[in-house]
Length: 321
Image 1 (cartoon, one colour):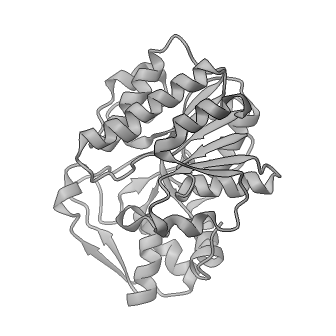
Image 2 (image 1 turned 120 degrees about the vertical axis):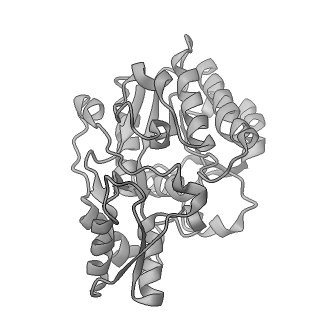
């Protein structure tokens, strides 16, 4: 059996869908299922059992001999949340316990880290274990992810294979429930449908023009391909970047969305909200050499390709993956 945590959420529900496409149906989905706005993400998915997040370790104790792999992708991902206690409980301590049971019972583990660990990027965006202790995330979410990475690298006892994945800016189907935390592409699409224009943040950094802020945007299908490649090729444990290796501007993102809908560009630039302005990343770009060096074979969607597929195949018809 394969365990997938955060299974009703954006990325994990896409992972369950792709596992089903590969005829893998012996899946245990773990989440806080009291949040019914995520229910549609698991409709039509095939799995054995739903397990509440708070009940998982009790369930595991009774089923541990049947578990063959764990994707621990569930986490509190709100970058505006300021409660360190919440992140300690859900991101740090829960993940430590997952690591410990996978180590004890010899179960391979892939877990979600985040590019938020890189902060302003003053130490670059290299998934080099030597820099993890130097990184300075910009918010408690990023700190919780980096704290777990640091803890992992101190462990002498490990699962037989493990990979911590630093997700960059992920977008794609099944993020309908995420509200403010949904991708800029998701919000841009709905702005266009409702107002025929897109709002982008102004730059408050003299080194970047309005709309010239750059991120490494990765389509969720590429991310899932990486997860499954690592599951099938357990050659080198470690922390891996999960991006495309190419930063693109928010202006290009907006223009790609206009193009996918066949609408003439019309962009308003608005002030970045005060509560995130001093913690805003102006540039991220994953160094993907470590993943490529172990033989990852797939070409990544360009931003324009990914936006086009996302808009036409999922957002416009309101379909799930």
